[in-house]
Length: 134
View 1 (tube, rainbow, N blue to C red):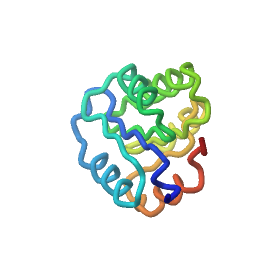
View 2 (cartoon, one colour):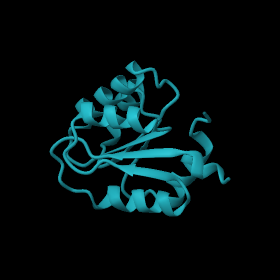
View 3 (tube, helix red, strand yellow):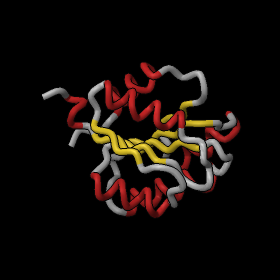
């Protein structure tokens, strides 16, 4: 069995952000690369994303934010997932994220931040190298 087939990636769209094209492109590319992908859909609360991550036993949680609410939403998701005991989960953030917010997101537990211009190959390679083995 391919290692990627064993990695479960949850792609989440928190908050009021209604722009999901990027998240859908990422979800499809990851699926086509062989990962098991779960897409939550639009307008998810942090609590809904945490519950989905727990129920799906996600190895990777990718949070797509284009609304500017990343500093509030991302830490809430990370804290919720970790509080559930999923301490080895890989957290990725993508979207319109100003560089001055990178440090605070990483301090909150985000492992990597992908901004516009990141190639699909870069994201796939990052997950390959960093997703936890369970």
